[in-house]
Image 1 (spheres, rainbow over the protein chains, first blue to last red):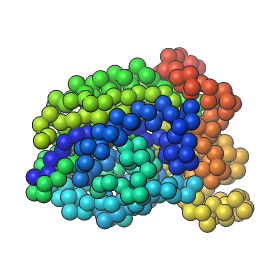
Image 2 (spheres, rainbow over the protein chains, first blue to last red):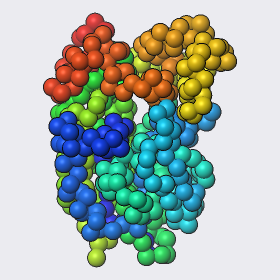
Image 3 (tube, each protein chain N blue to C red):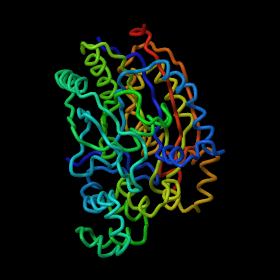
Image 4 (spheres, rainbow over the protein chains, first blue to last red):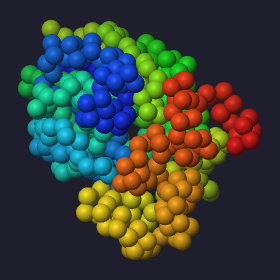
Length: 283
Length: 130
């Protein structure tokens, strides 16, 4: 049986990818950011996940205004890094896991979450920067990845509650897959940031740290925080944090927090990162 | 019944909602075209001729030509779409964001190094006259 053993959350700031791709990760500005992932890189080397369900948002790369899926799952064989306006990131092609992805799709839709199925799409910094932070610069990514895209660009995004409950459905789906797979789920984006208008540059460290506390120990209540609170308190792009609730919903009520990191700034953004292990499902 | 907009009292912030999306459709779709090197080269060669291929308003086109991101956002642009323009210009997200705040690039960078823009006084329009 496949099992979800752990969850990871991390911001996915594009400038982090640019810094790594251009050999700047040891600069004074970037060193503290990458240092926050040293534990996690060691940890994941020993965890050796087979598959990562990577929850992220597309930033007008695969999805223009032609069509905007609220929840989209990648069921394809592989995905290329997107050209977001400055060329494709020099990172490996992302290998999917179509068999598990289709299994999840059927299970989740039959649990009343109507996913959009995507065979072909490019994946942008929202997906590739977390992989870079956790795995560095390998010639090939060491595991399969199922991209799971959430709309947080076009209002209205899904509610935190809906995301949290979707996480629970994802867990059920994984656990009904009959191959023995070590599956992780990652929630990415955030933390507080605003990229537009006169309020750009907004950071709310108090909100962010409270969010981290509650994501670990009080996630059910946290999932009821409405959209307006994210926008007002964490900036217009802070709403990305609802994606962390999908990850959290897929884990046990009680989790073991192995690592916690918070840093300001990375470009316009507060970087937050957690490594959470399930208390069950581990061997 | 009109769509509910509980976010209009947040200062200095435009939520990319249904109305903005309708307004900005062609502007944002033009931005998507800049995701190939070939189109970026064509755009740089003759910006006006390039953008004239999209049925944008003159206000949207002037926003693009003057790289006035607040003006583009007011005309329905979404920042993740508009990012294709400043990426084409080789400008970082941080430098582009600073242009929307009335601060210089260096002032903005320093503000971020010092922990970013404070939430205090920035929750409601009535607090900051924004």
